[in-house]
Length: 103
Image (tube, rainbow, N blue to C red; front, side, top):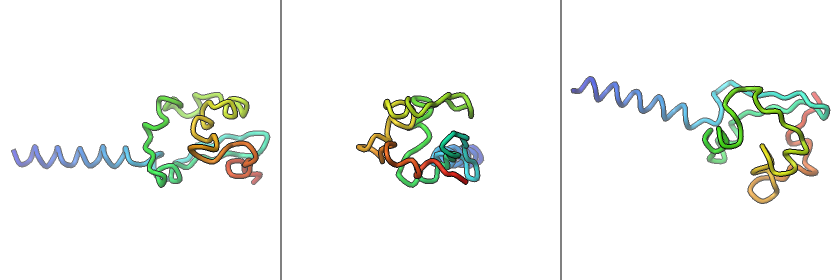
């Protein structure tokens, strides 16, 4: 019975540790756009108290590259624009350099 409890505790801790980070440590998602590359590193979102489930799979699919985003969609409140609307998080309009990097 003690072994079962230990295994259950380890399993719980492992699942909890995976769910608290917005993206796996050391992993990023990158998009090459005409305005420069956009790199999503979940550290900023995790620091704001968000978990993966905040966006996945309500807004984004879990598979990298499965979402075809256009800036017009984001500006219309889809994808990143769902939160980055100037109310919940910084607006995407007039803040290009926050996400888009020329390097």
